Amino acid sequence: AFKAWNATRPKTPDVPGLVGHYPFDDWAGKTVPNAANPKLAGVAVEGPKAVPGRHGQAALLGGDNGFNFPAVGHFTRSDPFTLSLWVK
Image 1 (cartoon, rainbow, N blue to C red):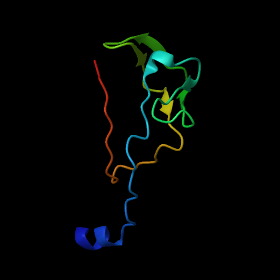
Image 2: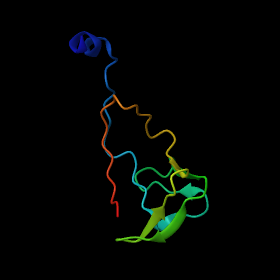
Image 3: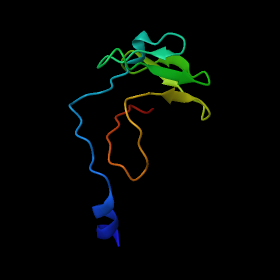
């Protein structure tokens, strides 16, 4: 069943390289600049707080807040993607 389902999935688009890099050091208000593509900034949602991080500034999340990264990608749990975080 999995092979049949997998054969019907749309082809995964080729990604030309790094599409998002959001260092929180330049985060101001709701806008999180994208170092890889300045036209695709992130947006802080529900007031995450800036805190000192291991390397520069970090974000403190309380469970109801977070970030949206529009136009960078939309992923579901069955889609392959890579995300890199430093979590304390």
